[in-house]
Length: 370
Image (cartoon, rainbow, N blue to C red; front, side):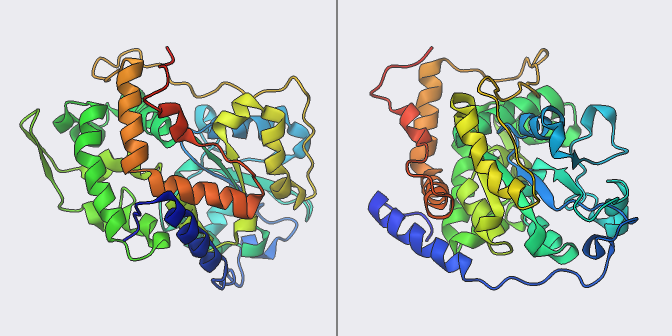
């Protein structure tokens, strides 16, 4: 069982799990392709990745590193739509296009020290991605930037994003319609199913592979929604706001393929509160390639990708007190172990003394912020 009852036991077992993860031997990359040759005149394959998480400031962080800090010289994919030139999606949905196509999308390598960046936050949603990166690239040269956020607000933000952008698609509409399109009913019926998958996983670093929204666990699974009288069948897609927010388990999955020291993790709320101090946690990933980011005191995270929900008549909104109750319950009964895993990772691997405790904002005894 992965879920535990006491915080002390959580901390002990988390440290043990994390120590075991870093002892896993890492496989070598592919023997010969455009990416491993790294030859001048061939395609410029990414070695730096911004892998997530969705709705945790990844677009703003990408814009900051590629545009506002143009002196870093981080190349990004060419030939993508002008309104979405960030995410190439090679290692998830376009893998069949082949590694030579991937290399060609970043232009020609003019020098051995040139660097390009693949910024596809969906990569943290798909369990197959790290193994594919390990296979196609030189694993030791890869570095991964990860931005995390309060998993409750991230889940609701992704739910809102679905309404703003994806609900016009038939599969998303079919996934949310049985719940009356309500976040609260998704929490009531979907979260226990995801938690059952988490608890049935033998090892913590197997959870993401077992319980990600596209996993076989959800195939054929359905649930009757008492409030609407409807049956939900597309539970995997509907589960994504919650399963995608299990940061601790997801990073453990990636640590099976890459050393934790190859990751630079920033916290979205800390980027807002102390931008200069938080960006400093990106320096190990950038300095590996000989890149240094200079931060001006007045700089802050760019405000991007805030999708307006102008026609979201089906979107469920909440009074602050009601959302606080939902958030408190999610943190206590669903995100507890994942939160402890990610905080322990931040302390053990990245030297953070007191990582943010998101659940403290949902203390029902404290006043509600308007």
